[in-house]
Image (cartoon, rainbow over all chains, first blue to last red; front, top):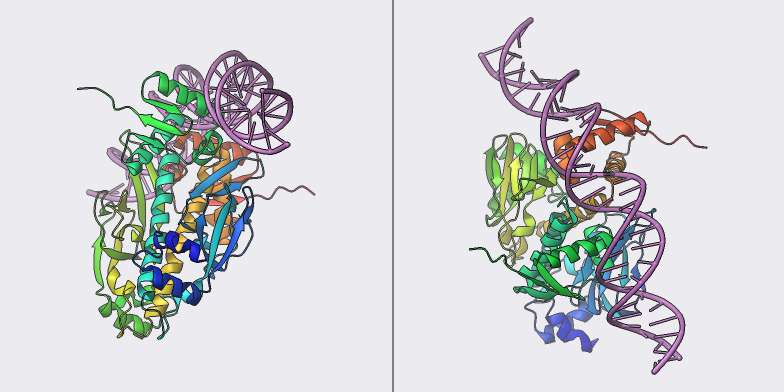
Length: 224
Length: 224
DNA sequence: CTCCTTTTGTTGTAAAAACAACAGAATCGT
DNA sequence: ACGATTCTGTTGTTTTTACAACAAAAGGAG
């Protein structure tokens, strides 16, 4: 568990909390860890979630398959991010999506009640933790809204441009690497992979962008 | 302000808090109210949000227009719901969407820091309030994921069915009223209005459903 | 009630996406 | 290094959607 203290220090949830405090909080929050192999299911649709979970290592995909076999990738979870937290509340039913390990991954589980309940003997940093929890889930929320922004675009090209320019903004650079392969990007934007591939080709031909594997470079329109 | 105590009592945020306590908390949280006429902007894209806001009366739409003039409705806010909360955090920039009053509306503003900061002299129900805040924003999150579920469907028909069956589930009945007119429903699902209208016609013709204005009835497939 | 505005439904056409099938490239395990 | 598998790109066909233009219905204001 010690091994992940540094990772936790970098997470939204423990932001501002010192390593020593994190160590003591791990006990207070009844932390538990579990490892998953690539392809394993971390949560399965229909499961009831009782813990706050953080990805300590690896990469996860939140995805949903409908009964026509269409897969939709709702979100990617990177190292240090929290997930499944929206389905911990009493009024929420079971989780509606599968969470699968895209790489070998390590997940930490925390007792949510210990975080939400402010007892008199609370750790010194408890209040900060609560604030961080609020900030973290707010960020999730904003990400979902942004994804909706991409998906709401009418054409595949517009969806791609919306997503890619967001990524460029996030990396603060015209060149960046995306966390998806082609099929996954298509599933994320809810478009057909092959159609998306050919659209990417066209855009490259037209000089809008260049790409190789997952590395993309957007070209500014040189008009002035 | 007194007038809205009963409404507040029914909200997620104040769930479990008595009317007397709410009254005293209103002061503690520095509540402020503002009214808007139909069509007014409650928040404008680019604005920085500093308060937790609850809709006390009326109906709001969270929407975004891109520079091609396509409008996308991200969400509806009904009476008693919280909104804009994801953009209060320090790391979030300005809000990315417009929030407009779909009807004459009354909005209450609360000081978020007073909610998040657990001081020793905190109101008795403060801990409950924090828990409720977490639950409320979690619910928002689940709603966004559900919307993504609708939008991820490939065809207009599948999007409609996904949305309508969710609504049926929510109302726990095959007959229900949706909070959108046709244009708004199209903007919510990100499809063309006229195409959607004709798709609805076809579905009615095929006996899948019946509708009149905003009132829909889904017909179970009578196969057995 | 009547006019005016907004909303809803209809149709045809042009554009775009989904789908399917395949070839080439990259990656992985042994 | 090898074959097997997965990933990426290409193309042609079919289906669906967007778009535009208009008619019908509903709702509001005076």
